[in-house]
Image 1 (spheres, helix red, strand yellow):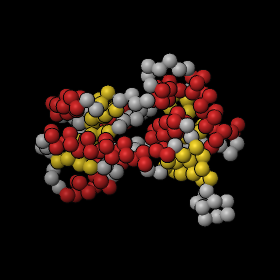
Image 2: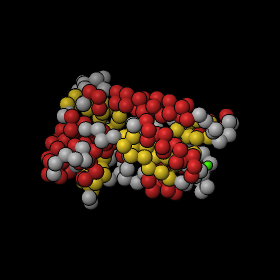
Image 3: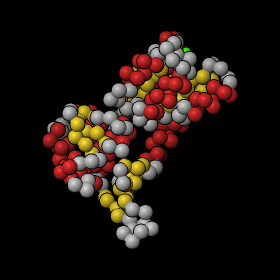
Length: 235
Ligand code: CA
């Protein structure tokens, strides 16, 4: 199922950005490494695309990296973000973390230090499969392939809905993207793999079954919405 991890490097220093790209490519953890030299390019890069990790310079020519970080979070980006801070100032760090960054590395840094942080965050992000996400009235547990509704306190108790692996993967991807439309092609590629010979009909069948499980009224979906060109998860 995995199609390889993706990384976005937002850094205006061309030499540093190239060095980062080369070193991170050598790790072998990333199938795709995209680059952006300023905040505006970073926003373009995340449109309709989910990165497993984002490296974000604090001093960009058009914007403060912390503002870029806050805007990315606002737009639903949930990937780990590591800020590259120029000054060894506690204020910078704190504002960066307030803006929604997961971590920071102070320049000049040793490449080995940065690579270690990158790996640590990728590991943590993988384990976050164990986390529980809220989807509409449900608690979504991807690792357990399960949706739970109700808190067990009321007379109705909890109701558990079992999902198949593909249904879980579809829901997980739509959740990670945030409140954005994902094209059928992207969803097919992410869930079945880009080389798999599956048609959109297969995807539509899975969406249909998923709606039967999660929608109060499957014919009038309120959670898993059909949009022009794709699907969107309505949080
Ligand atoms: Ca800079």
